Length: 396
Ligand SMILES: Cc1ncc(COP(=O)(O)O)c(C=O)c1O
Image 1 (cartoon, rainbow, N blue to C red):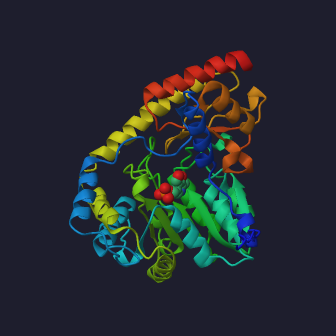
Image 2: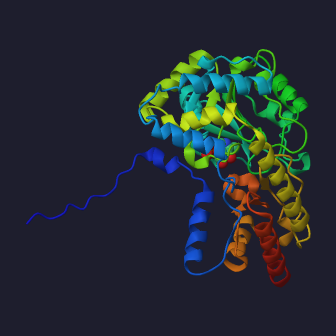
């Protein structure tokens, strides 16, 4: 009889540097509580609760039926690259060529690929904190130096350009910007973007501009670094379909970048995914070129929910929340409750039946805050507010 060999799992060292997205873990815990019969309002996960618009869904189904089930070009279907170049360029007032577009499965690969393609181990990458946790995770994973720039509530979570200027060194290779921002809902103004460009000056630094929430903006309008003269070649602009068209599960996103860099990103695609799902891309052509009214409807609805949530959470003892200008998150300050973010988020889940995220899930400077996603119905948002209010009256 042969005995099974018990061997130790010997992971590569770099795996210890890989972070995660807590939203998925909290979702798992919330589901486990639901399985035990507890009712939970889900305000933890960052995805639209709407269905993918019918015209896009129909285009995807028709594509499946008509054979778009094979490999396609690594950088994306030519027709989708053209449609994105036209749409994303027009919205930002710049001319974009299809060769400057790389289509990938979701927005996330552009983050990974940009850092992988550009950054050496000794290089520094400046990134927002609190911010989307994948930036820090990927910088650390790839062995580069992570340099957080703190986003401050008193500045409505826009970054302080003077602080940015102080953080830039000769070793800075990449700066990550994100507007509208996850988790704070902060939005950079046109002047902010111009000031950031001046602070970087003519240094040899690339910027990854994560604009995945660019169509979800409630006040003012979106302004892209890419549209400033001379900046298109120094910007990798990340956008995608997950948030704008409620297509998180389809996995469709893209980067716009100088054509020579795009060929290297295509090589990374060949080595990792081969290509983005072909039928998903055909649905994407309909999403960017077809009727846009569902995008406007979803944005208006997120704004209505934001207003209800912010007004309600500001009534809760110890909470104070600024009005986010974009995306679909609220990021209230909870320092006056006397609780830490993690303890409070855990207690709200276990005792009030409301799932949200600790600000620290977005980096060390998220301490003192919670993130709530308002991508849920008004009815559920009101239920969450009422549960939190009752909990606070008893426990704070
Ligand atoms: C700021 C930011 N960038 C990128 C992404 C990634 O989006 P996708 O699901 O398309 O990969 C997200 C998703 O939450 C995000 O919040």
